[in-house]
Length: 108
Length: 124
Picture 1 (cartoon, rainbow over the protein chains, first blue to last red):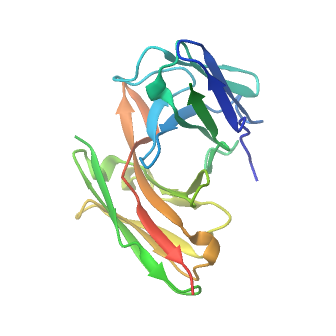
Picture 2: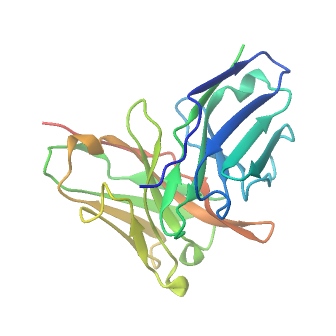
């Protein structure tokens, strides 16, 4: 079955830039989405269609893709950005969704 | 404001059945594509399946681990989404979330808003 692979963890100091990658064979043809999940809470959409940001999401969150890899960048990370981040996309048929393995972001 | 409220979770023995509900408000439910996602304790998110709006065919798709055991349905007259779970296994223990599509700046995002989830525990 189709898989999206993320690094298990990323850590940084406040104000630094964090980059979280998501690798999948269908990403050149299918959009990537990114969700933030803080402890004990439901996920929240932070990036859609590879690089678009919903209203209310801080500008420090940005997304990009290149080939089979999507990247979520947090520029100038804040302590409140500590969370698990998941990429999401579909298989090549578009009929089955899949979430990435998840990345725990620590800001300390 | 979009609101999704899941209910129906609880403790069930392996081999048993359970039906989850997701009550929707704050948007036009009949136009929405609805998705179920689960998260086992301490684990990542897992896509379970999705049902399209009736105007888009009302069809369903499922992940392999639940195909043939789980059924997604909707009642647009009640603004409610359902997940019928049969032949439950211990591996099905998880928080189950429903999620809705939404149009954001003219783009349809299939998983845009989430409920708070309901816990299902399959254990003897």
